[in-house]
Image (cartoon, rainbow over all chains, first blue to last red; front, side, top):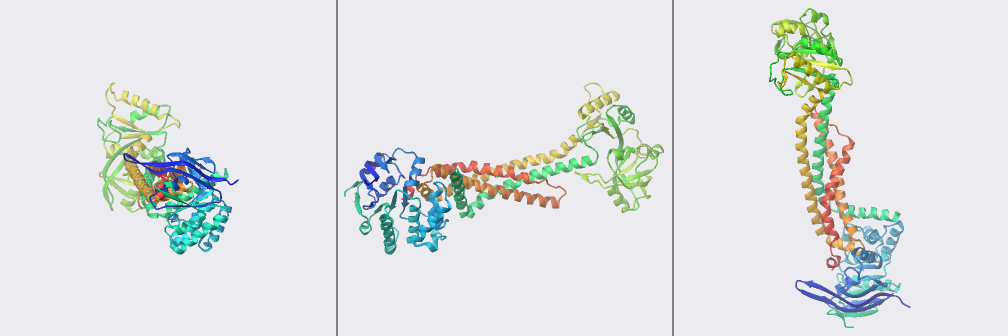
Length: 224
Length: 405
């Protein structure tokens, strides 16, 4: 039987804006199985980022059930949530979010600092990862010395280093040119073929087509 | 366990890398601490140095824990006499000498008088003394001899000069020469070794003559100005002072409730008097230093708030990657801790430099040892961590979801 990584039932998220309460997610049901490659599509402002924040445990749903790897994360405190993020989720962002004064290698290793600390073996693994992603010559470059595509590949390596249950990429190609986008999507396909679960958001149909499954979000609900 | 300490070390490493990534911020935050700590340590050091120097000179004069001074005339410590002064006599001393705890008494007459030689003429301290004066003040004769019992008995017109006086009046070749004091010629029979200065009191400028000679030929009076009493080692000087005071009051017919016409001074009072001025200064400067530290603390706090604001997306990123609020707190406290470390060590070194420079160009020499490093660091750390707490808390409470979009 295939394991469910994400199981969401009637997840709602609303924000208070002064007097008014704005509901951004209006009852999301979502199942993602181990080894899936899911693209969540939809124009901006329809709740994609909010959904990603909830999936990534950066935010708690207002109501509903969310089981990550079978564990209920809706009632966890901030400290517990940070542990879950550290161990189970590999984040990739539209604007890369690398630490500017750290080298590529140091950026990749950062999640492990917040786990049990970096070991010599971890450094070897990070080096191998970067080499695999074509950055073997740039291990000690800082983000400012790398192109956008290269920076995003460093971010992918950072997401992979902790062996998470799921790779979450929010508009990973949003800041990249065509060639770099192709490259990044090829990497996603590759790592998915190795058995990793990947969830991305995009507003670009061509990008979404690289995934195995597409769901469209509109006005806080999945329409397909 | 190993993993835990490795993790902790690497958390601190992360903070340190962030700190040194902006050297300008580090400089501004550490600057106030450096100045404050340097001021505090150097002032403290110079104050202690002065005190040590005074104690050394007093000990050098054999004015240690078992000696005290009787001055003619009552009044405030070291101020002018406010009662009659002509009551302290050698007969008083004869009585005191019979006390069990008294080892030696050295009575003196003292005056500032016009003194002249063929080479120089100036007002100089002239002292009429007993032979015991030399031993009781632990003062070696450099050339010639001191006043002898024979000189005293025969009211000899001989004198012994302080090192500086000998140089000024005879260019150093003083033995056998004649010195005129109030129209009387004295033959120089000895020159004392160099002693130095206590504050403005120049020990090496003096002319010493036999007390009997000074009574008849110079001051034309019997009463004495002062006497130094050497007590048996281990004597309780406070008790001894009371005994001496009781005897003198009775002999001087001072009724109950009337003020003493003499003063008794112990070495600890002299040290206290000489350090009081520097202590007031020290207190004042400590207050200034403290203000400096508070100001630098506020500067640190403001810069830290600015850093947290500027780095909030990186903080959110760290949280996304698994840093707990506690980790972020530690991260930013470690940054102010690093600033404090730099500021504390820098302040210590600057303080050391100030003390070395002052010691080189002035007679004060500071006491500065490595132990100052610990209070310096402690003060800097307390300031840094105290004022770093609020910014670190703000950082740990940032909402990661909103900042990463």
